[in-house]
Length: 353
Image (cartoon, rainbow, N blue to C red; front, side, top):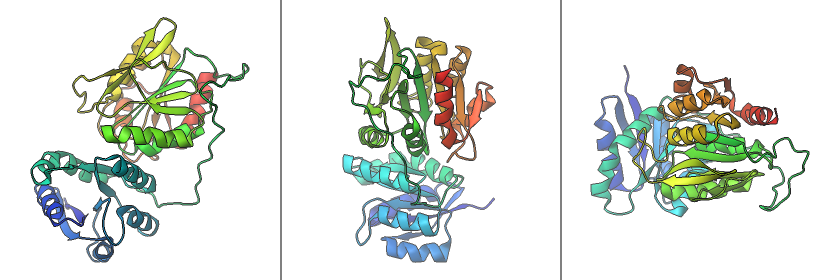
């Protein structure tokens, strides 16, 4: 079996050397070249025809996001971004995911020589996964149409079919999920049921991600806080590094955050959130499992299915990585397998019945 060919693009000689050693340590990967800036990278892509690119976010002469936009428009290929764990780095990385990067790894802010090695397993896994991901050309003609947003205290029309306060929408995602979640939130109406979302994401990224989603959604989207009441027309995104659970408190649902150990190697975990929704809301919820690597969320979806909640999995064709949805399908707990662009419509139909 041929090795996956990797090209490393980073202005730091130390990072290039360390990434080369890490990736070459895996028998299935081969670093075929490195480049210190996008101009050199452009020539090496032509000469070496790599399968995967690792791309630094911040570089001289041309930043990584500008280069990525050009690359995805002219020669789409799997790209894993290497970013800093800062709010600015998070925002730039989220832009890169919008442009078509498959995933990202976070670069330590200090003592890179000693701490980057602890990221070796994650970097290797994500590069190998990227080689199998579905990459689509960048289409700048696609414009997301956002419905009018209600203010937080807006009164939703009584004739609305989705105005009920005792329904919960639960969405889980991993690799490719930031864009999949965006597509769903952009199409849900302002009076959609209270929505809880777990996306595998670092702590520094979840706040900026929630802000970006609030800007494109008719719903009010925020990073979840412990004890926060779950209201219709609002979406709550799990903070990176903390599990998000739904708890019933009398006639209300509230968000509960927990610092327990990772589940399926993740905190937040989709399984943890789905399980809590199954126990708190039962058949009054809808479960949606989106693109992602691994199996987090499959067993939790099974519990929601057994509790009577309708379950939806994103289909393979529209997924960047069809791992988590596939595992749920294998368990036999998925009611519908739906293309990403039709999931919001199905959610509305289910809650309208």
